[in-house]
Length: 173
Image 1 (cartoon, rainbow, N blue to C red):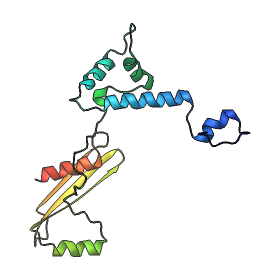
Image 2 (image 1 turned 135 degrees about the horizontal axis):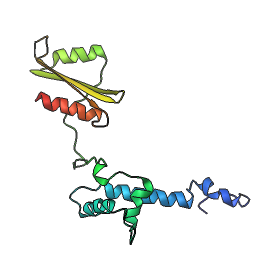
Image 3 (image 1 turned 180 degrees about the vertical axis):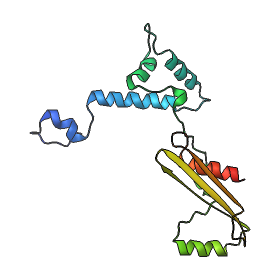
Image 4 (image 1 turned 60 degrees about the vertical axis):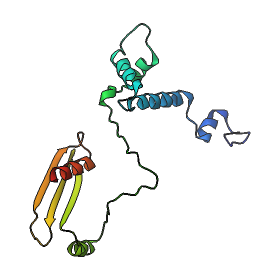
């Protein structure tokens, strides 16, 4: 059996013992996952238009389809407001061309001093109290003062921390 329980186990606890959800919760989980998958399809996908149209017409009383009822059941926002993060297509052997190092202060200072490049960019970002911020500093070889300094601040709901860092870096170039 899938439960792995003994004959004397109470039958009403077998699903819990096996780690299975009750049927009503399992169906809701499957429906929720299906709607979210529809919502996060790329804009080029023809099904995206169908999902957006179904959301607009969800209050239709006659011949209402499950696609129109599910967003109401889960109280979901419109498909156009759901954030989709697309991943870049890269081969499996691809390696990031940037050398990222997190060192102790003394080691980082020594490596930065001895680096053979003409320019060095240092960046950092963080989030606090609903805000996200990032900063980037550009140093020219041999100069003590930075050649350029950029700061970026935004509300967290609008930007993620890495987007703030990226925006700061793009403003630098």
